[in-house]
Length: 284
Ligand code: DHB
Ligand code: FE
Image (cartoon, rainbow, N blue to C red; front, side, top):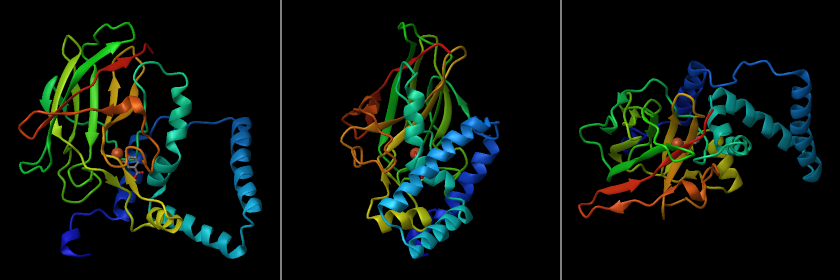
């Protein structure tokens, strides 16, 4: 590792942290019993897809063994949360979205951490004294589907820093940095001061990165804000917001962008940005 790469997280480091975070938060459904009929139907379909790929592309023994080696390495590196969230979660989200009204959802990704600092409706996210990046004010209102403000709604927000790294998953970033739970005022309003994140690159030094290189793909996600918006009696929304004109908005490796989720920040004339976005929640 060279000194210029000092704070770049390794794939193994990010993978291990993401695996640990997943286990610690016991994501919804993890460990829940699934009926034999369901396991039979879904696993049979997955295997049928694999079998078909082998037949169609006449996969050879050396290729089969290379795949086995790669799968072992993904496990050893703790990279399953990264791999699955980049390449599979967007379809699970699309299925969930079929029954969801209000603000569009997007993938959770591997870097959510619960129990962050609670903040008032007008707040700055915790950041380092020398936090780099373009200052961004992100403001708006949470309403129900009938247009009524939702007071006391929580915006659980987290995002990468100006180098594209997340606190809790990269070395040298303080715990809780650029993360917080902002509570809306009696008009459902919020105004969050932070910085504009950079695009995120999947760590390229691990097996997921090796696959991306081997396949000739690119490893980038567009810059994004992550949000979970929740209020008692309402269906929780997990989503992400992107930046109009930003790199990779039209070529997200995780295929998790939607046209409704693109912000259009305005330059405030002093080098800072302001963006308005309203969230709409449906009843649970
Ligand atoms: C991954 C990282 C992200 O920041 C994200 O939002 C989704 C997926 C990943 O590395 O898997
Ligand atoms: Fe992310």
